[in-house]
Image (cartoon, rainbow, N blue to C red; front, side):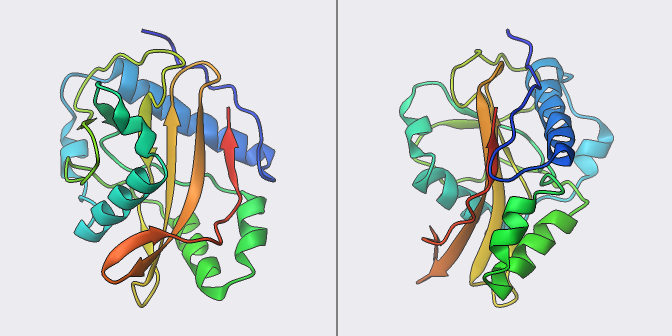
Amino acid sequence: MSEIDVTTSEYGGGTRELNTTIRSILLLVALVAGNAQSSFSGQDRDRKEVSTDSYAVYSAILTQHYGSWFRQKEPILVLPYTVLEPQGHQGCRTQAQQSAVVQDLLRMLLAEKEQFRIAAKFRLPGPYKVLTGKAEIRENHEPGAVFLSAVGFSRDSSKAIVLVGHNCGGLCGDGYVWILDKRKGNWHMTHDQLNCGWVK
């Protein structure tokens, strides 16, 4: 099992503050994916679970943008609780100013201070597993460990925002903020995405 390297490079207008937060997220990924205890503490079990609507958003973005991950035989590994979106990401904030709704969504995502439990309630095109203990991450074998933020919803529940990222050790991994629209009861990626995120 490889040790996850937390060295990152900036992308899409990020700042030094972003790198510090990304390192914290990647350390969390390393802890859960490589060194987690075999059972979660009472605090983890007491965390609130994400909403049913959040699972629909996660399933949509993982299927529509990351569908190739599910063509492999091994199950995709998902962290068992949400991560916080990196703060100070000026690239996202600048682009979000073009739409009041998107600006509100991004503000909501950046303001989230609580982590939520994630259960195996996704509808995905292939096998996956929500981590409940130790897991071996093969270095440079995508996606490694997938992490998700809490989902932010617009007031009319027609738009959603979410951070999706993954870490596969060394310089392997990335993360992006995605905007989705709800059309005819289903979530779809929008054409006017925020072009901000990071790559390792």
